[in-house]
Each structure stands twice: as C-alpha cells, then as structure tokens.
Amino acid sequence: MKRGLGGDRALGTGRSAHRRQGSCTAPPKVSAAIRVPCRRRVKRALNVECVRSPRTSYSAPGVASNVVECSCCGHDRERLATLPSRDDVRLCRDCVGWLAGQGGVDSTPTLPVIDLAEAVAFYERAGFGVRIYKDENGSPGGFAFVDFDGQSVFDLDVMAIDPKRNGAGCYLIVSDAENWHSRMSATGLPVTPIADQPWGMREFTLTDPFGNNIRIGRSVD
Image (cartoon, rainbow, N blue to C red; front, side):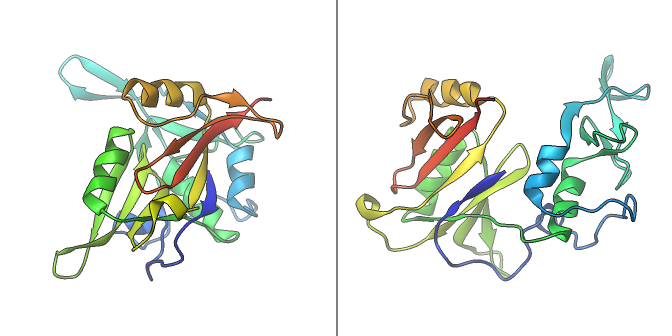
C-alpha cells in the first residue's frame, strides 16, 4: 500500500499491474458475490502468506518449489492471499490489485527528480526495481516506474526543481519495517532512526538526492 503526493503529471495509460505487464485483459471474476470497495479494505481483509500445495514444480534438477494455482487467473504462484471467510479462495498479487481497482480509485505517487539516471541508481541501491519509460520509438523518456517485489510503489518524473525546497514524498506500509531499515542502513543510504510514533506507526524516512522523503513503516499493533 502506498500513499502520498508528488508531481502532478501522469501518463495517460492505466497503472494497474496487468497493464504494466502489457496485458489489458482483466482476469476472470472469482464470484459475483465478492465486492471490493477499495484497495485499503482489500489489503486489510486478505491474509498474504506462502501457501503450500501438493503439486510440485521443478525449476532445476533436484530443486523443488511448492506452488498453488490462483483461483482467479489460474496461474501457478508461490505467494497468494487467502480470504478470511473462504480459505479455499486464493488470489495472486496481480488479481488482488485488479480487484481493488474495480471498486474505486487507484493512486500512484509521482516523485520529481532532476537526473533520472541518478535516481534509478539510488532506488536500485535501496532495493527497488526501476523500469524507465520508453516512447513509441524506443527512446527513453524522463519517466520511470518504481516497484518492490513486482508491486508498484511510486513513479519518477524529471522536473526542474530545487531539492532544498522539494516537499514531495510518499508512505510505504510494510510488515517488516525493521528489516527495511537494516537493509538500507547497511548500504549507507540516508535514513532516519526507526522509532514508534504517536499515530501508531513504527517508521523511518529515506531521503533521495532530490529531496523526496520516502517514509516506510508498519503498525505498532
């Protein structure tokens, strides 16, 4: 889940996981009775876990990995979400994101940067995946998509800004904020100490070279 404000320029195409992967075809519906009012409720209602399956696939000789079929798209996945009231219904991340988008608005923060190459290097060092947008001629533009473990978190847009006056940023809610902090601290990235806050979050802030503040935290409950 992410929230926050950044630049106000956005692409004209959809931002869902299916569209980013080059497919505009919506996955089949699980059940007409399942209603998804908003992304936040979906993520709170679903229990994301690694589900073991009696079926086994082999990625290399002698190496096995447990997979299970997504109840929505039918693809084999290692990480699925289960419904609290229907443990036989298991959904992959792409389908959870698609379902959430059917019930309301999906938001992706766009953060302003001055040098896209420098921004890409910074966020890859922080453990994110970055994909630079290319136009119809294959030429790289001044825009990039940032994800973590295949899930979209925010975008980057080249703008003429003053990093000292930049107030943009976003908030990433994760389950293991301590691990995120340890990983980023170990690489020498500019992060604040992690601490419990009065609003019920244990969090820290990562600041990029352009003044964007990425707050990362988890609930203390």
